[in-house]
Amino acid sequence: MKLTLSVFIIVMGLPFIAHGFDNSKTDAKYVEARAVQDLFVRGKKAIRRCYLYASKGTAEVPPATQEMVLDFMIEPDGKLQYMKLEPTRSVYKNEEVANCISRRAASWDFPKLSSQRAERYFQGVRFDPRD
Image (tube, rainbow, N blue to C red; front, side, top):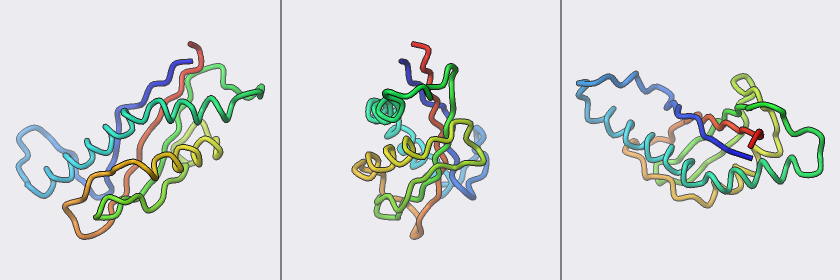
């Protein structure tokens, strides 16, 4: 089975970052968002294990690529406040997989944030079981 991660991450309240846009606060948020996304890429094996564990021994393994969107909040000190399935944006709505990813992500070292308040993110994860 192959697992690929989608390439989008959204920070709530962060405007679209175009080339040449010069705002140091926004640039810092962009760098933080990229660091968060990199954690998901480095955590790919753990995420894959969650998917395989949840689908082991069931006939519920999706026959085609499925996408799940995770909604999570990071505290200014880099601690994960929560992570959960975002059902309105997810095609693959497996709570067991989402909860497993959340438990694993709780041990990741998220970046310290430039803001004094927690930031909300959405991360897409794409599972491809055809491999």
